[in-house]
Length: 90
Image (cartoon, rainbow, N blue to C red; front, side, top):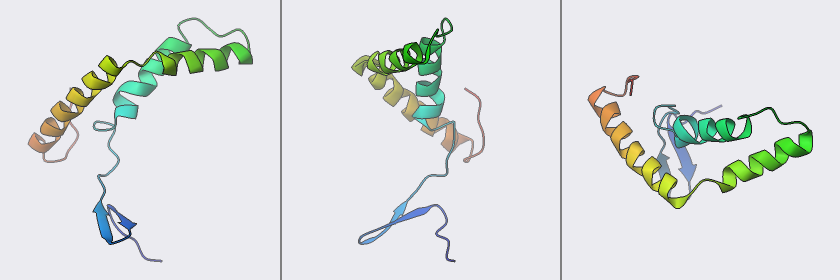
């Protein structure tokens, strides 16, 4: 089996692929915490209630929130560069 460390194969060559880092992944540093906070503010009473809350939580993500996440990613990338790719605290 061949491995392609930190790369994804695509038509026309390789694409550099960042290692999975929760410091740089918006799903980890923003989205899951936001969704969990919205869904479990109070315990859901039924499975249907849980599903509705999840749908509502995703619908509550606004363009402004996404813009703020984009700015945060830029800041985190700079901190990662300063830390030479090592773990960093925000």
